Image: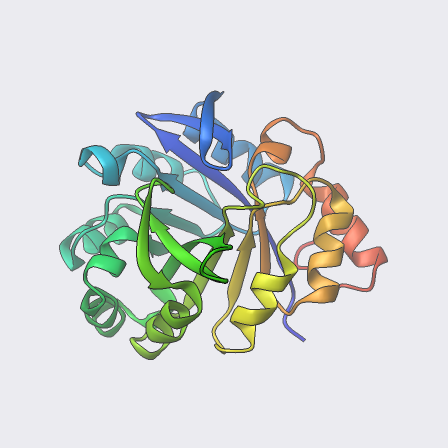
Length: 254
């Protein structure tokens, strides 16, 4: 049985880690390198860095931050935000990233997924999916630019397409559940997992340790990701892993 992972997410805007609710009302959390070191020491299985201002403003990738962080980490690091080409991916991997996360650029140019997976290997390519339920359409739709722009692409169609193009992993954020701390969007996650066979990281809604245990019991996702509850130390990663283990979940690095 594959062991489940717990992944803190660092949303970085203009060089500072920030967090909001449903992608709005961002507040400063702290220095990305210091936070990454802390999570490394606290037992995180991986880290995700998302530069949420890069796509919007088009500024340079966080190469210096990534290089400095990678020198002090012993866990895998995924980087996303503002990645537009295989050259960008190459720079990030060379700076110390283990994987890259694509969202807006992949939706704009799906062939980038194919090119990147063929050049660097599927295991390096994670597709971030920001999904929001549209009641009038009775379906989920993909959003880009940090949740600001809705596309006409249905989430369930898109996840199948990216798997076919060679993506090795999905990072699925339920925008409706993001920051609400009421549990993960099991309905969305189950739908996606019925359609794809690649690993899924679940994001959006984790508010306590039991939410992660419920996530792993109710769905077959490979990892649970959260931000504010870890940043604010509302719950420790060790507490999450302990709770999951007590609920019969096979965890990594307990």
